[in-house]
View 1 (cartoon, rainbow, N blue to C red):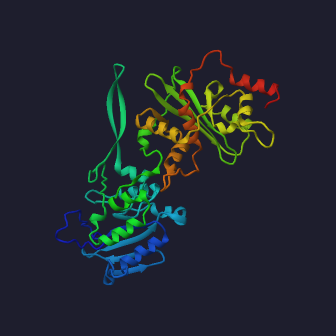
View 2: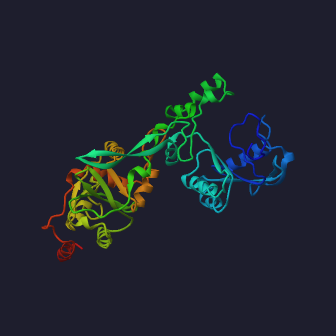
Length: 426
């Protein structure tokens, strides 16, 4: 309708009134993009083409660009793009630097493509309505899904006689318009062409965790994001840490995978644990890591705070028989064996996030990136990969009872370095 500007009489939605339009269509990969093109201009199976050949004035299938005549006597420019698979890195640049009237995305886009699409329609002029339409089966909770289904509600609560700000994540209902966005759940009952025998056969071939997503439009709770929270709920602007805050550090050992540390500051008055600093580097020795950290503002608490470390670091190296625990303790770090019960640790972290008791400084982009990609598969199993800072965070949260404040009798960092050099350790 929007491409041809040929609206039926009963249509109560928005109608474009300008003669010349630019429309984009997006598919996951080149195969889906080509299929979109065929459905538009050739039809599929017994279904006719959406756009009759008599309206086409220009068509370049290779570049996926087309022009058609519309009902107002103008031209509608149609471009078909991709946002996933092997083409994603090369194709993302094609979503930039254009003014677009209407964008239709077939299946869930990447968050980066969605943000680019939002930028493309915000340049429309007064009374020039830009919109994005997305048709997708969202089987998992992802940052994209959360951007439609959740919001952060800010309130004030009384805490020890003082009014303080509080935030919590609440669900948005289907059909509720928020910040210019709305989602509608569509299930099999909305697809009137599906017969009962078809539904029965289709359900029999689905994974149990997919049934609600595909039959009711509900993403599965058991798959997708491990921490299904909006970044607005978990992040905060950095601030100067008061001296009375207690410090705690989490550490995950690595070599080809990064050695990762998260630095936490606990406000005992509010119970909020802030992740103030992150460190993640690969293929470096303990000496090199400590030398790097010595120069970084934010890592000062490593001089005296307890470090909740991956218990796997206690295993002896086949090369020299020394454990990473021993090496780092010899260099002055207060290492403590962390609890490595992953499922319990994740639930503890999630509950702290939902309660507003775990915050991450916006100056920690790596851990935020790990959160976006930390997910369960369709069977509810954790997908291992880019999660080293999250492991360090989990160790830190589990050992928050070890958080301590700096005291005057703590060894000075430079003194520790000199002492270790004298012992021949460094």
